[in-house]
Image (cartoon, rainbow, N blue to C red; front, side):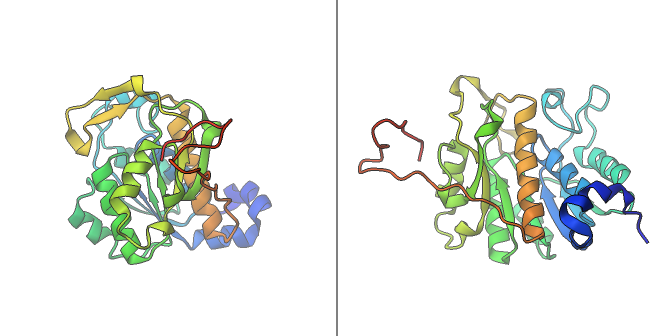
Length: 265
């Protein structure tokens, strides 16, 4: 029998039945960067019994300011393999599948041929993110998706809502527009920030891994996104409520009522 004494503090909060339920769940985490690496660790530490983690990238020196696997001693090493060692060191009984690949449409279809109890989308590039979300929606599996964590500093501005209800997030706006033809897009729970992005932190990239640009990041903000994503997944798996933020109402012309600042659609 698996040793669950390490989960005794969690059991005080969610009960022995909650721990037993989580041990029977299988969670897929796609993307192990600043958001996904922390989200994966939080899911593991919550006591989920089976996980599949996906990332084809290696550690780059620029990752060290925010990504859990990134150290000065492991540049060029697979993020997925580093996280594999870390998660199994936390819970040696964890059933863990590691997919050390980038998410192509074909790989996405292969991944989602298997059923998961929950999918966590922690991808920070639009094209593979859309591939995962559309495939997951067609499969009918529950999913939480992280929106833009770059160019922001205030973790108290993080919110959870259905994807079509997101606002004040340019990244979420792109995702909404590309998925608007999917009738079930409203089934995606989205973690987003209402903080205005700092546009002067934008930098153009070489276009690799589907990314043509990126915003500056601070150490704690992606981790906060990962924590909120993990909390949504765990609460849903336990049948606990998740408060959804309401989209602000607008007056005609798309402007906010007098006395309130305008928000990004």
